[in-house]
Image 1: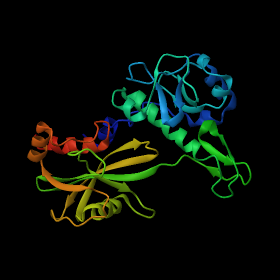
Image 2: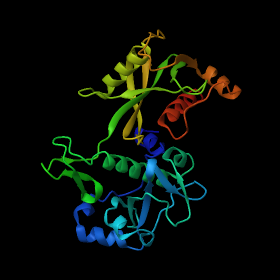
Image 3: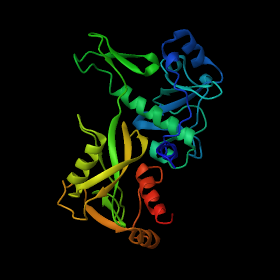
Image 4: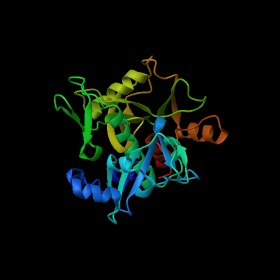
Length: 300
């Protein structure tokens, strides 16, 4: 399996959607798409909640006639599917008169099909950026959003802003037959995951891997390899998964971000999972896939 295939397997990363950038600035075509009976809308609610199906197993996508003219007119274009159907997102302070329930993105991701999970992540990330780009960072004046929700422009100095994504590396560190896993403060006892951190300005991904592992654990990384990526809109990250080889199993004091660090063999992890004394991150995370792939390699 290559990196592209591994990424497609990650939750939020398999959205089969043409984002249709040319449509964002075609006012007439955009209006027709917003009002077309075939178009569907992701509804964003307060506190980053989404309108989901009554069973919570997918998005409850609304047709245009269940939205107000104002909602349709300001809706954000997400793109078109293979059949040409347009998808939008819009916000509401109230639950719609449409069968469903309000659900957070993490809860939705646990059971939704790949398309719904990816669409929800996309809509959530854009909604967060729009909420936090209402003012100009240069002069403080208010902004307006155009390009179908994909650009903010200052009403005073005309400075444009575009949706941002914060890159972070997440790493499964190996030495011999063991992997380095950590537990953050506040996590349940026995919950362990891979190590992660944000990429700093002027830093390559490989440098970020070496720095983050050294800062959090004191371990020294000799080499690392890209594994896969995952959009992570909590609120606006892109997780870049790596595997890395440590020079030894020596650990330092770390920077205090982790409550516990352990080198675990595959046997340690299997035994802990079977006995219930250990648990892994949620299945929809790239951290889970990194650990799962490492465990699978022993069987290969």
